[in-house]
Image 1 (spheres, rainbow, N blue to C red):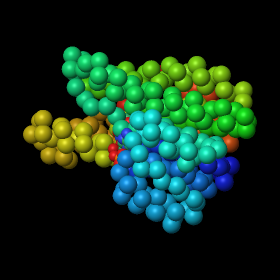
Image 2 (image 1 turned 90 degrees about the vertical axis):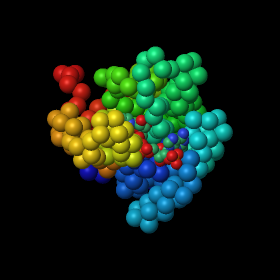
Image 3 (image 1 turned 90 degrees about the horizontal axis):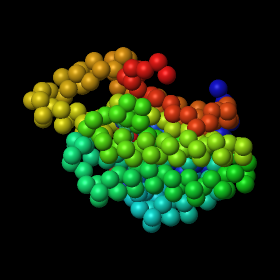
Image 4 (image 1 turned 30 degrees about the vertical axis):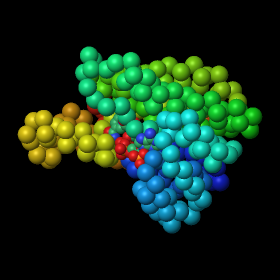
Length: 259
Ligand code: NAP
């Protein structure tokens, strides 16, 4: 299926690895020129070089912390007139409900709620004026089904979801859609990090830790960054213009709910 995205211009935040990289690669496959961002320059340059070589699109890199005002300003300046925005950043640290103080909440809200909101506020006016735009926010399955150890993530991402629900309906009449993609467990560095924590806590091997988690997923495996990217590209496509303010779970069936 032709996604109708050839020649469009996208900013994909936090995209040197993992799910952000999956989205960047899927958009590049469709002929989208990219601004890619991450904090670490080396991995970012390597990812950008690989995309240029494989897909022949233009890629600009901005090494910056996207959760800072300076980082946001830098990616937006590099972005220019953007057609597509994919928001993403690292997730907050785990813990339990009584661990977190005001500063922890402010940091999580900054990273996973206020950063995507600031980026949307910056790009939406241009998209609306040009009559076309796509925003995809990478959130988490924790928005639909809370993960007890990730209370900071549950809180910040649900706040973002509320903002998107109202905002998406205010901009849709201008040809601009905003939707959220909710990853369940995917085979990225983040999953390795969480699995390593399980091996240490339970004294089991990496394979045993993985099999334990596979058992909680009806698909009996982790998702891949390529699958995730393909869904992102579809939400950005010409075919998805009537999909507005939705929260699409990509979790192999892990959230056990009818709707
Ligand atoms: P990942 O494999 O660890 O990749 C994270 C990417 O984001 C890297 O490119 C990293 O590069 C960049 N990054 C992190 N913090 C950044 C910042 N402040 N500014 C700019 N770039 C930043 O993680 P992932 O698995 O793709 O996860 C992406 C998001 O989805 C996270 O918020 C995660 O919590 C959420 N999520 C993931 C899963 C999963 O199973 N993978 C499930 C649910 C939710 P640098 O470190 O060089 O900056």
